[in-house]
Image (cartoon, rainbow, N blue to C red; front, side, top):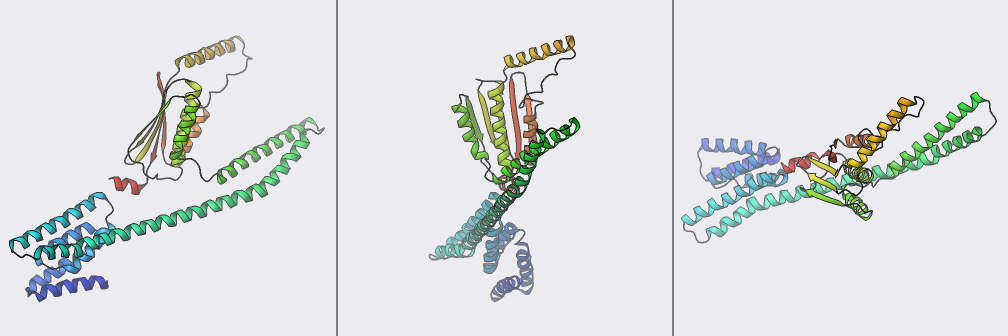
Length: 376
C-alpha cells in the first residue's frame, strides 16, 4: 500500500510541477492508481497504460518502473513477453522520432538511456527474480520428494524387518504342519493356511520392492528398452514428435515405459520377426505413446484351429479339460488389464487396436498444467 501511494503521489507531483490543470491532475492520479492496482493481476495491461501515460505526459517515471517490474516478474507466457517487448520498442521509436524532429543532437542518447533505465532494466530485474523464485520452488519440491523417498525406504525396512519375520515364521510352521500326520479335515485347513501365508509373503515382498524401487524407469528408459529389443533380434524404430514436457502425475513416465515394454513383449511373442514401430507424440496437453506391429495371421490361424479342435474334443468328450485362459498381452488377457490400470492410475487412457493386419497399443498421458499453459 505504501508503494501504491508513493507512486501515485510522485508522478502526480511531477505533473503538477509542469503546471498541469487541476482536472488533468485528478484524471492522471485516478488512471495511475488504477494501473498500479491492476499491475499484480494484469501486468501487461498496466504496463501498456504506463507507456501510454508516459507518452502523453512525458513523465510517469515511477509508474513505468513499477509496472515494468511487475510485467517481467509475473508475465510467463511467450505471447505476453513478446507484446511487452514490442510495446517497449514502439515507445522507444516514438521518443526517438520526437527527438529527431526537435533537432536535439544529444537527445537520442538521453532518450535511449531513459528507456533502458525506466523500462528495460525493471523488466529484466522482474524476470530474473521470477526465475530465481521458480528455481527455489523446484528445489523445495526436490527436497520434499527426497524426504518422501527417504520415508518410503524407512517404511520398507520396517515392514521387511517386522512383518517379514513374523510371516516367515507362520510360513515355516504352516509348512511343518502340512507334512505332519493330521486328519483329512485338518490337513485341508492347514494347506489353506500355508497357501495364505505364502501369498501374504509374496505380496509383502512385492510391496516392499515397490517402496524401495524409488527410481522407476520413465520415458528416458525407453531407449534402453528399444536397445535391448534390437539386441535380441527385433526390428524396432522409434518416432518422436514435439518437445518433451513434465507430466501431470509422477507415475505417468513409468506408465509410458510400461506401455512400450508391454508392446515389445507382445510383438516378440505373437508376431516374431515383424517390424515394430514405437511412437512418442508430445501433444500440447498430453503424450501419446504408441506401439504397433503387423499381426501374425499365421499364429492367429493356428490359435483359431486349436480353439476349433478343443471345441470339437469337448463336444465328443464332455469330461475333457477346459480351454486354457487367453495369453497375457492379447485382448482379453491379464497383461493388458494390469497395464490399463497403471495408465489410469497415472491419469491417462489406454486403447488396444487389434486390427486384422496390425496390432497397436496407444496410451494418452496428460501433461502438467504449467506446461500446457506455457505452450498455449
